[in-house]
Length: 263
Ligand code: MF3
Ligand code: CO
Image (cartoon, rainbow, N blue to C red; front, side):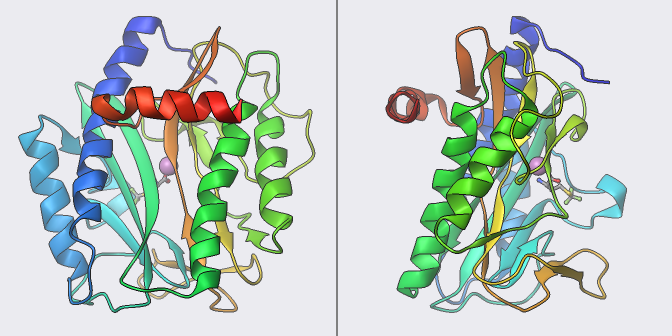
């Protein structure tokens, strides 16, 4: 069942998403060689609480941390550890927060020091593919119009779209219906309507899309161990079109301009 949100509920969901955006933005400044991923996790948890939110991932289906830190061939759900970042790595940080029962969720992939041109391209393509999907998140379209736009864009660069993880409805819980795959033919799935709140999250790789789960039962890696990147925002569909909720208040005008450019 898809739960549509009122304008007031969307504002509540925006509050937790602003915290997510703020935390991810501060984490970006901590990304450098030598940093332990557990240190990033501790910071995210502390900052979210200072900002009045509760980390949403900790304890979710037994997930042991507040942040997901997925390095290189790790796609999603990398568990923070004593592992330290090295120059040339890429790391996806995925964070969720909840305020008064309203959930936010976003992810971004960062470069650690200098990275290869291919890694840079992978990161920019995953971000841009999100915006290709976002353009399709308009009332009257169907969910798979988002999926197809992401897939077409990503594959035009010879990269692969991960298929075993999908975006999702979000708001009253971390994961709600509908599922939002990053691949598929356009014109299928639920009709996109005002009041839908979705986490759109392309995950892509340089090689193949097959996935393997490590023995920690969480970390998802590419089977061929090729480099993978991830980008996610929580968005709300309004009568006027989609709006990104997981951005800091001061970035909202900037990103609206970007949305406009892409629309
Ligand atoms: N952002 C991810 C998702 O949407 C991660 C949540 S899974 C968790 O599925 F277990 F780590 F919380
Ligand atoms: Co998500």
